[in-house]
Length: 434
Image (cartoon, rainbow, N blue to C red):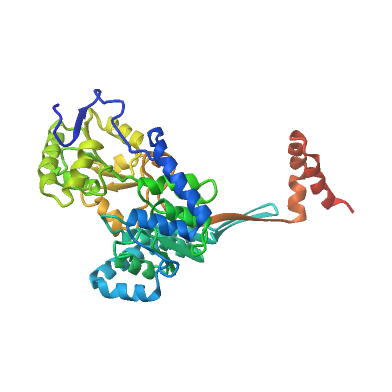
């Protein structure tokens, strides 16, 4: 099958070994970039706020001071005057649906078991503080505030910090401020990039360190999170964004093309893929992509993503489609086929699975109550999307009666002898001496 100009199209078994090109932030060819980020982190650790001001002026062309680094209450109040009521209502709908799901998840976790005098209770304890990174740049992401800060608040985290790059005017987009206020965030700072990650990880005079950093970002941000992770907890590295669509001839090629373009517009390094069993359908989607990418908004970004990192694969069987999907482990997986639910049951690795023609990525991003901070770059093989559980620690509380300890006493002796830890058993035995 000939390749379309804007996207790679392959048939199995002629699939290239690197068919799922990913822009991995920790690739070896990024050694020079990693060195730059290490320098930024070290400067923030050494010089604190002064380094934040220096890098913000260098990268964002904004001059900050100790007085302007943190967003004030007046700035938040002014932000409400700059946004539309329907935008506030949409953010509140997202918040309410996400909160409902997260609170339900919390109710499922605490458990207690008892066996012959020994009781074990599993309880949840929130982290003390969390830093939420909210990207800036050519797009605005108030939804990321909701997806990161709200679960932390629901978990009971006392201190939630938001960092986001300033605009050229030295402010933060009003929608990000409104979303932060809606979610109860009380600390918002006008700093982005690797310097923001370093500030949250190690602290400065103005920004105190946090226990965990979450949120998506640029390659700079992702690498910075990985580098500081030896000192502070992070969520899974998130980004660049991905969508993989499994579709057959029953799907609408225009809809599939629109879904791929919707993900490609995130950035030139985004990945949008289609796997299908129909050669004719693949050709129809490729043609639709050609047509739509010419006139779409953010066309330059979309074309770059489609031509560099995106693909269409034609498989011989549904089983082959499922196998490739599980190998790829996409951030977002759409299934628009016959028996879509049955196919979904066979998927083992994906950030989120969207079933049927009326379940686009935009639904899970904004209105389904699911969290859209999801594993990318193959991390879906071992990580889940962000949730309230990521801001909690599980703690087991164990209590035994004398009779309960007596019943397992000899078993404990066998194992302490096996591992040559005699004092472990003597601590047990001491409880039964007169």
